[in-house]
View 1 (spheres, one colour):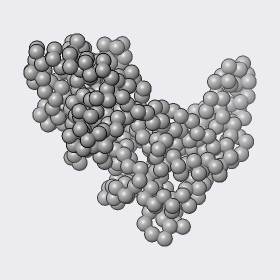
View 2 (cartoon, one colour; view 1 turned 135 degrees about the vertical axis):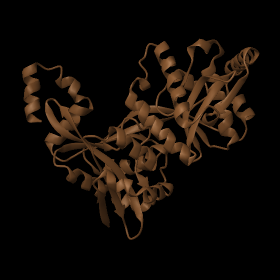
View 3 (tube, rainbow, N blue to C red; view 1 turned 120 degrees about the vertical axis):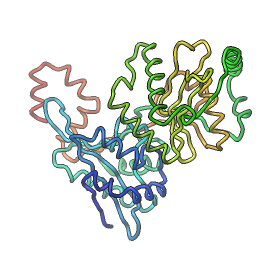
View 4 (cartoon, rainbow, N blue to C red; view 1 turned 60 degrees about the horizontal axis):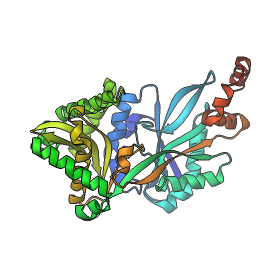
Length: 373
């Protein structure tokens, strides 16, 4: 087996066609693993970090690729190197690119060992937001079986709705109260306005449509007393660039519910690989009596069924409104793989729950632990 490493982001930027071809053949394939998402994220948030892509070849094409980043963090006064997936935090799903499971299963432990040995000042690899039903989870479970101290925990739930062949069938699966309420809200809205559900191109170009989306999302969050994701200008710029890149590929599912041509509700989603991924939504609280958010999601589900998509994925978070659509739930796992040695295992413990105990100790003991680390 030959192991190849790409040590700079330029290696990925120079390999767009190669990366996308590899992803198209990967068993785990979602929008957060695309070249467009990863390189755009790195453009805005990669400063001070190092990107590497570990790949495995086994007498043929690449069977396994692991995109990771190194960053510095401080634990109890000690600067350490953190190893995690690229775009951690903003990506709802993360994982490996796996084109051949059997070959990948024979290579994964060797590749993980290479990652461990690559950085002298790292203590632990943290692979977060791995879907429980993914091939990546299966491979990391095999690492878990062979690595002392490796742990797995559930970090988030991700509701999703399997889409049937027709909307009538799906509608009957909803609770009677939800069906009745949807009819009432639709009737009220249609009585007062001309109601339409449109895609972003009918609103304006991508940049203009994203500005409207940001505004509606922020209005809803501020009404709830939250600052909202898009109070941060860098986040707005990042998602605008993602939306532009995805629109060029036909992956942008940015929808608006309009009253007399005025956007009052929105869903920012990705239409990718036979699924809809609902990233964020929002609505104007001025029209809350019509439940425009619920009406938008009803229309989004109808759209997905009409396009013969397999699933509407609500992504991370167990917000109450998601359960109203008879959503099922999958979990995201976090796998922590410590390097060998008592010191590294102790570090892993302190960053995986044990630190709360240490911070409860007198300051002198905290300083002692910091020196040991």
